[in-house]
Length: 150
Image (tube, rainbow, N blue to C red; front, top):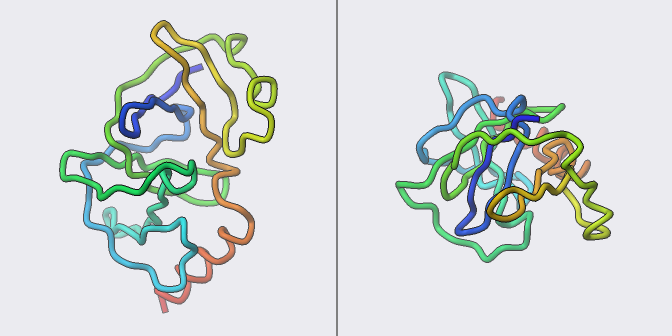
């Protein structure tokens, strides 16, 4: 299993590499009226309007202003493409599928995590983009994007 490893401050996380489209330098984010609180706004990526969602807010981390040296991960959930601001992308790591522990076995009721894997220098929480937005947030985001397009 190949993972894209990224950092928020000093904590490392991962997404399945197959879900990641690209890594970008931090871009200016335009506001998106009526979007759910998890959405920071949108970016224009070669004519595609992509919602930017706040991973820090979803994980309950303290807010922070994104710096010029930060990066964005552009990744696909089953429903849409999202941009995720991160402190930095650390690269790709390959792990055995058998090494991934289901999140409920370690931390019951941990949301938005598909698995936990121990690596040489710590652990990685593998995020599940398909559950990153609640159904209500997904619908509200869809309406906000439609309203902005009209």
